[in-house]
Every structure is written in C-alpha cells, then in structure tokens.
Length: 385
Image (cartoon, rainbow, N blue to C red; front, side, top):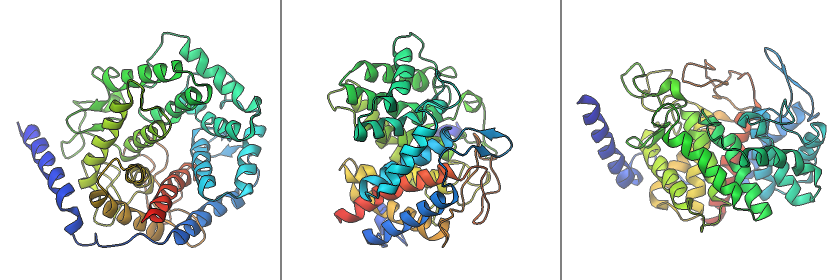
C-alpha cells in the first residue's frame, strides 16, 4: 500500500513539476550562445583526439581490448553528431581511420549477435552514407541480416543493448529502403520491453526501465524503491531518439516509440537535482547520490532533441535542458577538455565509484560520446532561439 501511495504521490509531483518548473529558482537561466557551446564541444573532443591519435590503438585497462568495443563506438556516435554541426574534415578522417583499422568489422568477432560488439556499426553506416564504399557497410549488414533471418528475439537482455544495436536496424532499413529491418527491430525491442525477466524490463507505472532481470522486483534500493539506473535509462533515451530521427512516421510502431520517449522524459523531469545533474540511482538519491555526467548528458540529449522536433512543451523542458547543460559544461568539463563526474562502466549505482570532478573512469570515451550527443542537440536548440 505504501508503494502505491508513493507512486501516486510521485505522479502528482511529476505533473506539478511539469506545470510549475519555469517558476522554480534557477530556471530563469538562458542557454549559452551557439558559438560558446561549439567551443565547449571542440575543447572536449580535441582533448580526446590528441590523447588517442591512433584510432586503432587497443584499449588497456584491467585487460587489453580492441578499440572498436562499445565504449569507443559511443564516442564515435558523438563525433559523427558533432560533424553535422562542425564539418571539420579531421572528424571524418579520424572516424574513417577507426573503421579501416578494424576492417569495418564488429568488435571481437566477425559474426556476432552481441549488441555491444555491433555498436560500431552505427558509425560505419554513417560513413558509408557519406562515402559509398561497400566495404564500410558489408560486415555489419551481414550480422544484422543474420538476425533478421532468424526467429530469435531475446538478444537484448539488458537495456544498454537497446542503444548499442537498435539504431543500426533503423539505419539499414532507411539506407536500403527495406522495412524488414524495422520489423525485426521492433520484435527485439518488444521482447525486452514486455517479456525479458518475466514481464519485461519496462515499468509502465514509473515509465522507467530496470537495467536487466537482476533488478526487477523484488529487488529494491536501500530506500525501498525500485532500482532505475540513470545511465541505463539514458541508453534507452538515446536509442529512441536515434530511431525516431530516421524511422518513417508511417511505421506501425513509430507512435509506440514516441510515446515511450515522451513518457520517460516526463518521468525524468522532476528527478533532476537542483544543480542540474541527475543521480545515478533515479529513485534513491541516497544510494551513491551525487553529480553524474553520463546519465545527465543522455537525458539532455533526449530532451533537447524532443524540443527541437516540437514533440514536447518547450516552456517545460527548455529550463531543464538549460540547467543540465550548464552543469555539464561548467562543472563537468575541465579547462583542458577532460570530463569529470563520469561514472565508470558497470550496471548499477555502486559500480564505477567514486564519481567526482577529478576521478578518472576506466574508459573516458563513452562519457565524451554522451557529452557530444547532448551538446550537438543543445547547439541546434540555441541556434533556433
């Protein structure tokens, strides 16, 4: 009964937040000018490109990994987004070097169903669209074609996978004008949403996602609430944005994806911290609470994109985005381009800790990718105001 009351109270608070947010202290801020935003993005990106001039150099942490794993692939998603507003040939060359040094193949295995290892394909496809070299798209298309031609739909058993692989399907469908990719994409998404872990990883009451079956009820956070990991939900936001950005509106499931996105954004709005960030545990701010940049960047990406597309009320979401971007660009971004408050890899609030201004995560690349995705949409937003 207490849980029901808490949820009803939260729904009421969400509604009040969305109605009154523009009157709250600190919400009179304005976005920086677009040139300032672009300089912030360049600063962060240049730091990384100078640190990693060889796009094929393996990544060594606790072990050696190829440089086209998901963490680096997310960075290149951000770089390609930056390229759309800042057509610096260096970006194209850097991404091309990355693809060439990995033979335009998925990470680790030439044939894989693993979303993490397929993620690099998003950038390969983007480059293929620019350059029209068949080798750029062949391996990732072969992988996805194998999935399309099978009956298996339970591959995405953790919500991060939705971002890592789902946009590849829509990109292939649009590139080849072939709806079969859209259909398989939905079958995979629907299994994760409605069936994985018993009844699916999406909670329609709270409009948020459990990271995987380990976190579905009866699992609880220390305060008794469900565990909704910020970055995990951020990955879903990013996936839905990237799918909706390309999927034809005539697709049978377009409206469901759009509803899922806008419902998530509404659920996230009242959870923003006063300083503009979101906590790593969305419903338990006391469980490793504090500033965290990756979840914040992904939420900012989704909200800014939705404003730019006219899908949400600008009066409600612009102040939230403005506050979040100020947090990311003024508190996370260092003067040399390094990003602080980035939670290291993992699957829940306790992983990748501590998260501080100066702490270095085990991988620096995906945090930058999230920052560039967010900043690119914020730049477009500032350009339209």
